[in-house]
Length: 222
Image (tube, rainbow, N blue to C red; front, side, top):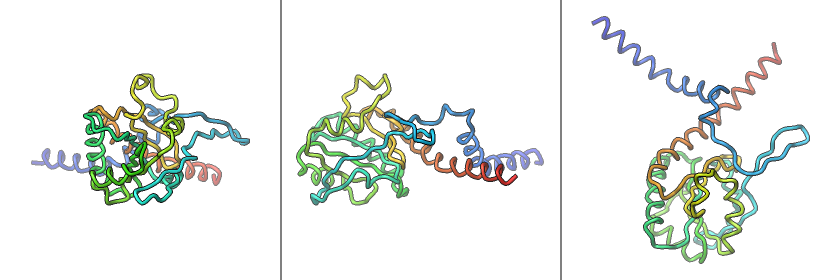
């Protein structure tokens, strides 16, 4: 009986400590393999700090033909999806993954899905109605100009294994600073779990800078 109780106590202790252990793993430099890269060009500030590429400079239209600035989505973790209006198996695959991801994170107000409808803005309302987009967590916006403008902003030095993909089939995950952190193949169902992991890692990163600043302040005090 005593062994059983000790086993249960150990299990309970492990469950209670798991969030802290996860934080330690994520915030330790020796575990960089679980971090996500930052895509796009970077430059150095006068202070020598790296300034990474941030998404900006595009204006879209919502279903009510109101202008929506790309920068308005910053301060959120955003998964961008591209839709060309084709009624195809591939589009249905992408949509089914988005539905699952939306259900998974719908309670997290700082995690959003943004579907960019390429072409006629009338399709924005059609897409919104088809997928019953009633919340701010999944929005549809339209872009009537040449889709190359969108491609030039979003598709930058993508991983080699994705270079043969049609770019509109890619999911683009962006952090709260507007930096591209992950590309995933939107037509592959196996990528859904990978995207969930990507989002969790970006969420966990929010706590790491706070720890570093605290450590620096303590060193200065000592």
